Every structure is written in C-alpha cells, then in structure tokens.
Length: 365
Image (cartoon, rainbow, N blue to C red; front, side, top):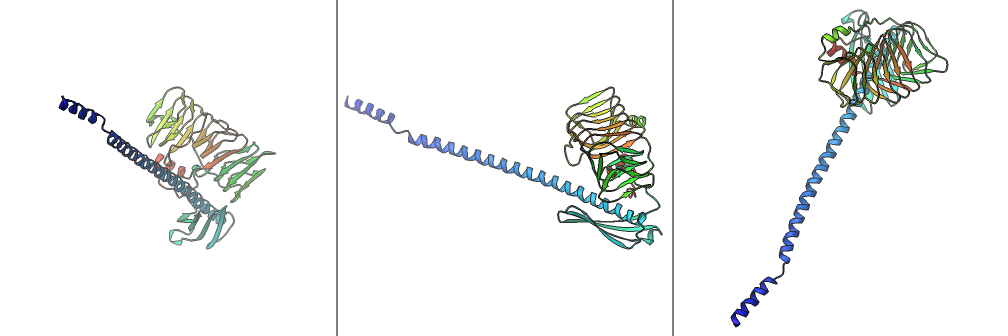
C-alpha cells in the first residue's frame, strides 16, 4: 500500500510540474513570427519608397527634358527671326532668359550647304543642366508645321475673354485681335499673316504680315479606312481610353470623354468631342492626337492632355481650363472663356509628323 501511495504521489507531482518552459517556447515562437513580419513589412516599405522615388525622378527628368526642348525650339526661332525679319547678319550671338532658364545661341553661315544656309547652335540651360543642339537650316525651304505652335489657326482669330495665356508660339493665317478689355499673353513668339491689334504680349517677338503657312484638311474617310478600331454612333468613355501605339480610334458620332489616357495614337471624331473631366496621361510616354470634324468643348476647370485638331467646327475652351499639347483650328472658330491656358507639347511635332504621317524631315522653319 505504501508503494502504491508513493506511486500516486509521484504521478501527482508530475502533473504539478511547472509549465514555464512551454510558455517560454511559445513566447519565443511569437517573437520570431513578429520579427519576421516586421522584417517583411520593412522590406515592403523600403521597396515602395524606392519605387515612389524612381517614379518621382522619372517625372522630374521628363519635365526637365520638355523644358530643354522648348528652350532649344525658342532659340532656333529667335535666331531665324533676328536674321530674316530684323536683318541681323551672321555671325552673331544672343542670350534669351526665361525666368531661371536661358537659351544661348551662336549663328554663322554654313556656306557648304548653300548660300542661304545657316549653322545655328543653341545651348539650353535649366536647373543647372545644359544641352546643346546644332542645326543646319536652309532658309529657302521647310516652312514651319502647325504642330509646332501652341495655338494655330489658318484664319483670323479674335481673343474675346478676360485673360488667355499660352506657353509656346501662336500663329494666325489672318488678323490676330484682342477685343477691348481682353488680353493674350504668349510665352514665345506670335506670328500673323495679317495685323496684330489689342492687348497682346509675347516674351520673344511679334511678326505681322508673316509668311502664310499652307495647311489642308484631314481626310476622315481615309482615316476611317485605316482605323484600327471603329465605333459606330455616339460614345461615352467615363474612365479614359487606352490605345496601342499607332492606333487610329474612329468614332462615327459624338464622343464624351474623361479619365486617364494611355498609349500613343489618334482619336478621330466625326461628330463633336466633349471633355467632361480631366484627361491626364497615364505615363510620361503617352501621346494622343484628337482630330475632330465637329465642335470641341472643354468644360470649365478641366485639365486636358492631347493635341487637338478641330476642322469645320468651334473650339470652346472652358473657364480655368488647361490644355497640355496644343490646339489647331482649320476653318474653325475659337471661343475662350476666362483664364484659359494652352501649353505646347514639343513631342507632338516629332511623333505626329514622323510616326503618323511618315514625314522624316523635321527641320521645319
């Protein structure tokens, strides 16, 4: 009996043994899991921060590249204006200031390319970085293209709002007039084949009775025949549009659009185009050209991306609207509300004429 009692006591003691070692093991496991979780979260945070930094750097580089391109273009235009319109004879130098940015130019004759040829070298500096372009220009050929202007009209144009502004050049195939109490400010040059009257200012120069730039309508039937996508009837796209590079997206009726634009291509609208909301580019490589047979309407406070070619209709740009790309009017009227801003996208000239029309010659002055 005594042995039995002792055996029971031993079993009882075993049951009463402390459980701390198990708790320590559980705590250790929890600590390990927490440490691994924190390590993973830290890695993910670092990866996201790195990705955001790369994205921000790419956007900064793109903006700087666009500013360099604009400075180079402005310098080339100023050199030609100085020689052709002001009678400045090569060789000569000049410096243009655009806030903190500047373009320095050197102009001399390039007799090896013809008696009227010029060699123009432009040094464009923005945020301390300088890029250089040297171009041989034959003055007897290569008229400027409409896509080189922020605002282009093949006929006379009336500015009838309280305030309009462009970053990039302006051209009219007739008279350019700002009615009483209204004004146009151009960061660039203003050219008109007629007279320039009213409160119109430019940071480069104004040229009245300038050479007429010949233009022609777009053939919508030919564009439809080569379209990669066709939509018959009216269409509403509230969430933007994605195109494969080189696409021609044809809408037989009216198009209502807002949302992100992704890819490179042309959108042809046989009816009217209305932008009901912002249409930002999805990335820095995207580029849209809109060809509108009817009216273009940009709602108030809308930020629009794209180069807009309006033929035979009216371009109605809403109050406080911003257009990044450019606006071309062909046999069309212009209606500008208060505080309209149009900024030229220098990529339009290269991509629109080289990729979309197959024209390789881009030295267009």
